[in-house]
Image (cartoon, rainbow, N blue to C red; front, top):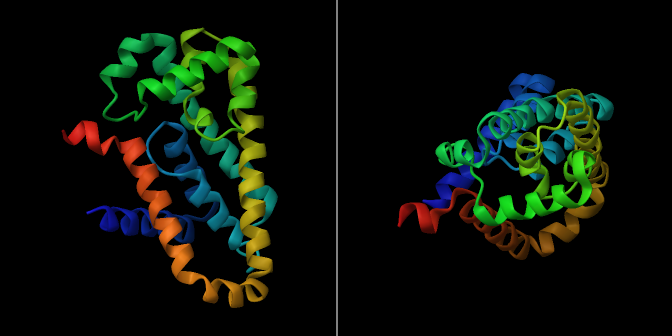
Length: 207
């Protein structure tokens, strides 16, 4: 079952980007930032990989990723702003956030205040959920959107750049990848399984 989910997830991401271009990147990043399980660590590097072929521009990808992420962040900000924890828990089947993840982001927000939205958007795990405590704390919308956009732009640019660098050196790296392809595949599978179990909460939800 997990294998089918992994294949479907990857195919959905690559197909969306291939067919919809920048708009597809923005849509996928919006979904990811709304705390719906789609890893930006797959979305942006794949799009960046296509920069080599001339399909995309690095700045354009970062801009599309930032716009989409800001839209998605606004959704969780809105839930936190108007309903707090109670509303988040009501929609927990759609907004996949665990108590542990929410606790981490709440502590992070308490330490840095409103600007934590900016810092949080460039950090794994925290970036997806930092909008919730920002909404609960009723950070002014203009400040929130500005911090979310610029933080997301940096994150999107960085991941797309990694994909670009991989694409530029693909022929040089291919010989090494072939030697260690089994190890790489196993690591990727275990990494994605861990990510899916963590975000979809297979153990607890199915139990």
